[in-house]
Image (cartoon, rainbow, N blue to C red; front, side, top):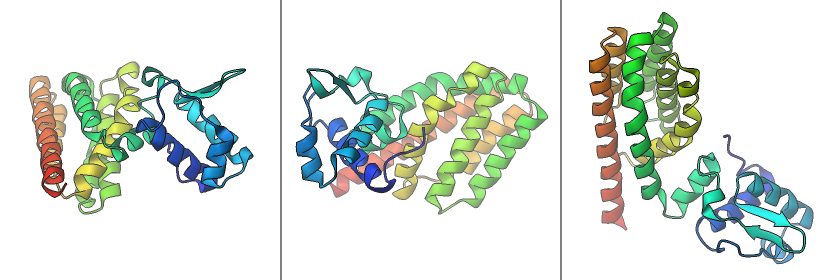
Amino acid sequence: MSSYAGRGVHGQVVRQLGARIVGGDFAEGEILDVRALGAELDVSLTVMRESLKVLAGKGLIDARQKRGTFVRPRAAWNLLDSDVIRWRVERGDGERLMRDLADVRSLVEPAAAHRAARRRTEADLVALGTALAAMADARGDTAAEAEADASFHRALLAATGNELLARLDLLLEPGLRERDRLVHARGGADDPVPSHRAVLDAIRDQDAPRAELAMLDLLAKAAEDLDHVSATRADTG
């Protein structure tokens, strides 16, 4: 899930082409003129080929004999990839992405909080408490805030005691990090500590219904923060 874009010349080419594909500059099924794109970006054919391999790994393109390199249908894209998520935001698809993320979280996290309250271990409480403390210390540091938030929600899923449910962090975390970056960078979020502490307190008390309600409240607050960002964008756009 780690970002490839930004790693030297290859990374810059990946970022430029990836953003253009995600943004619709190239239509689904369109054949890419690799040599012409290399000339446009002023990079060698070797760099282009290596960059295209990365984009193929993200599901954005494919290459076939006699057909060439072409853009794959959106349904084939790895929409959970951290770079693809970032490119969607950069190219104006962030609001749809964040609404989809909120919908998924509303289905998963309240139930996870309920289950975590019943199954949590002392080690789980330590992990949640450590993440909460980091969140409190991170105020004003966008990157640290996003890291602490991701750690808390990762620990929450782990506290369910369900290995498959715990791995849903692979689905949620890239979008959650981008959501936090958007909200916190624009100053659109109130202090997140109280809402997260309410979830932790209920889990510590093994009060499953209260943990579920606390998570619902947290998600409602997250939606308000996102609405604030959208309104700010509209006012300044």
